[in-house]
Length: 145
Ligand SMILES: Cc1cc2nc3c(=O)[nH]c(=O)nc-3n(C[C@H](O)[C@H](O)[C@H](O)COP(=O)(O)O)c2cc1C
Ligand SMILES: Nc1ncnc2c1ncn2[C@@H]1O[C@H](COP(=O)(O)OP(=O)(O)OP(=O)(O)O)[C@@H](O)[C@H]1O
Image 1 (tube, rainbow, N blue to C red):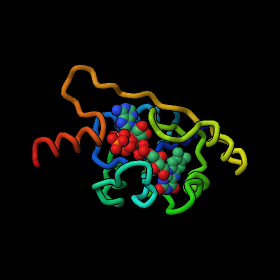
Image 2 (cartoon, protein in one colour):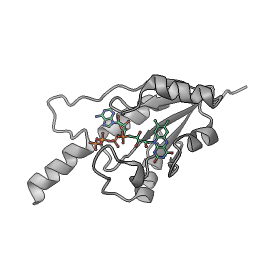
Image 3 (cartoon, helix red, strand yellow):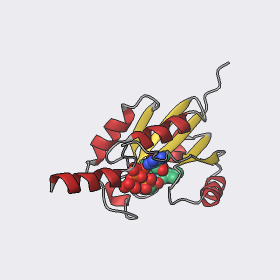
Image 4 (cartoon, helix red, strand yellow):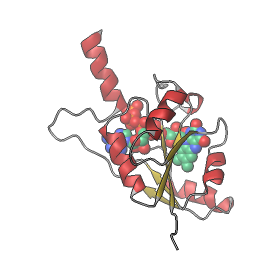
């Protein structure tokens, strides 16, 4: 019998880059199905809002090879999609501003049996890759303005 292990990853995914692929491939390695929650613009208050519209960010993430399904997150309650997906593992990004223990407590309160992991960072070596949306936008501003 095949046991499906559902994994959740999440983020803004404004302008896609190799760091996103690294994160999503690592998240996918924790199970058999990767579900991605794409943050809604109105919920992105911890940094500049995304340039790319919500639906376009969701469509681009869903097209990536490691991703089985991508959805826009809930407008108010971040646990609504979690309750619908019912994941076995949530993988936080290396720099995501969420505390594993706090997420784990919130899952336990809701009776959701799911572990919380933290992905690693794809660090820039000496090559030319741009490994954050911020870097890409800075490069555009430098070279196009
Ligand atoms: C478990 C979990 C569930 C989330 N659910 C939602 C959601 O339903 N709606 C949403 O807009 N953002 C959701 N988010 C994304 C957060 O709103 C936040 O923007 C994101 O984690 C920050 O990622 P980034 O700074 O790496 O882009 C969720 C995050 C986590 C960790
Ligand atoms: N270089 C990277 N290595 C590993 N994971 C990354 C990297 N860049 C982004 N991620 C992960 O991808 C997810 C989405 O991140 P996000 O969409 O905020 O991209 P970002 O490039 O970090 O954006 P910004 O530069 O605006 O912070 C997060 O979980 C984040 O940790």
